Amino acid sequence: MNLRSVYYAISPKSRLIVRKIVYSPVDFLDFLKGRKNKYVPKKGDIFIGSGDFISQGKHHLELLKQFAFLKQDYSVLDVGCGIGRAAVPLTQYLSDKGRYEGFDVVKKGITWCKNHITKDFPNFRFKHIPLNNDLYYLTDQKAESFVFPYENNSFDTVFLFSVFTHMQPLEVQNYLNEIHRVLKPNGKCLSTFFLYNEDIEQHISKENKGFCFPYEKGGYRIMNQKVPSANIAFSEEYLNQMITKSQLKLENKIYGSWSKREVNNSLSDYQDILILEKN
Ligand SMILES: C[S@@+](CC[C@H](N)C(=O)[O-])C[C@H]1O[C@@H](n2cnc3c(N)ncnc32)[C@H](O)[C@@H]1O
Figure 1: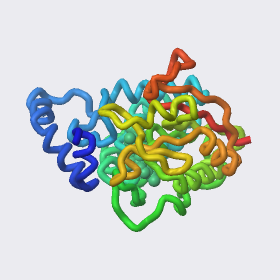
Figure 2 (figure 1 turned 45 degrees about the horizontal axis):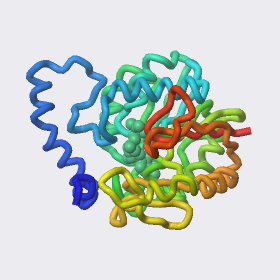
Figure 3 (figure 1 turned 180 degrees about the vertical axis):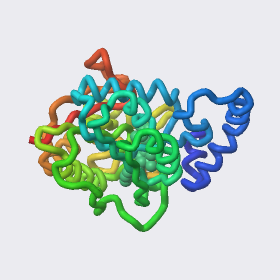
Figure 4 (figure 1 turned 90 degrees about the vertical axis):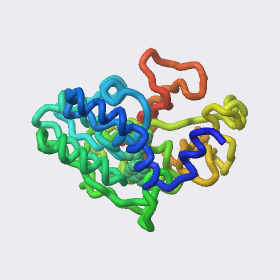
């Protein structure tokens, strides 16, 4: 059993508590030293993954500018905004005319964002939406039938960093449909995935200590049987069918480094990036 599977074996609530405990010495030291940046959560509260909070967020902003052609006065929607990793650098980029909306299933992240971001930047708004996700939050409320609480045609850009990598196919289909509904005509969606095709399926399916998707589910593969949303990879063919159903159009695909496939752009990410457009 590796560390990752131990982490998956406990409940979503316990995962938040374990993280808080593990990082409490680091956070205490930071407190003693006098924390400098009020827009960086405590390490024990960053439940959205590893890596440096600020540089990862800046990287996300660069991706949005380069691939989704984000502009300063745009209206943007951050689906699965976590604890504000992309929102923080966006406060320095979006103008007063710009508008940011974010929602997430984990209340802790949304509370932090409201207290630290909305307080200083009122055009940045966050909503907690309690929906089921076996990695992050357990409830009866289903993401596959959730209607985004926003008007039709209201966003220039919608983005999802590392969110569809934790969602089941019916949920992804519903979110793609909703993204199509809330995007303005010609609006763009930047979303990240783990994508595979027959060239790499064998390589990513091998059960080893590394990052792999051993369990085939018919069009998608999962990493862990007990927590199916822990990490999900989609076959490109299956995902293309979902995109077509949503009426979004695939504009660009930038492979990431996770699959060790040849990266096709100088600016890229660990995950694969898709740019979708509403025509
Ligand atoms: C790996 S984290 C990424 C967070 C954020 N996008 C970032 O890059 O910092 C995945 C996020 O997706 C959220 N999430 C999972 N299922 C969701 C759903 N159905 N709707 C909205 N957010 C969801 C989780 O709560 C978590 O904050």
